[in-house]
Image 1 (cartoon, helix red, strand yellow):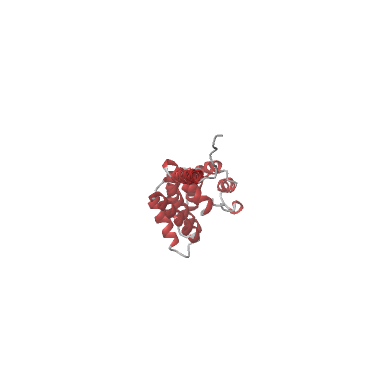
Image 2 (tube, rainbow, N blue to C red; image 1 turned 90 degrees about the vertical axis):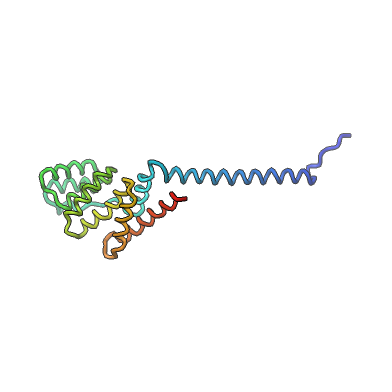
Length: 198
């Protein structure tokens, strides 16, 4: 009679244990590799400023709701603001642009030209108009909006140094309407840099 190998012998147990350990190690390595790949793809490469912009815009600095159009003059501005409030940014931008061509520029119009461009992800043009609003501004909520959204436009452009400077300046001013938003945006920006350094 032929001898059958004992499934439960010491050498069989050692062999199965070795296979299970190897499989466990390989599984852990695969999970770590896939997790690292996900983080890398999420926050690296040419899409990183857009991803970071989306993260900050969604969580920390939401889209501006616009002004109450009923109280605004001239009528072209009120109609454009209604479009802005309805998130019809291209239509709002067309109206704001027509008003700017008439020479009726002021800090509010410049700010909302910048905000419409920002929502359409036109970073350079948004920066131009938001900086113009700041240079024309006399303080108040419009200036504060231009400041916070300028930081966000710098993120979209990938100019993280300027974005960090904007957020830090606002965060240092406890009286600023967007003080808390700037603190959160700056923290998210710093977390982004920490991930990039790893």
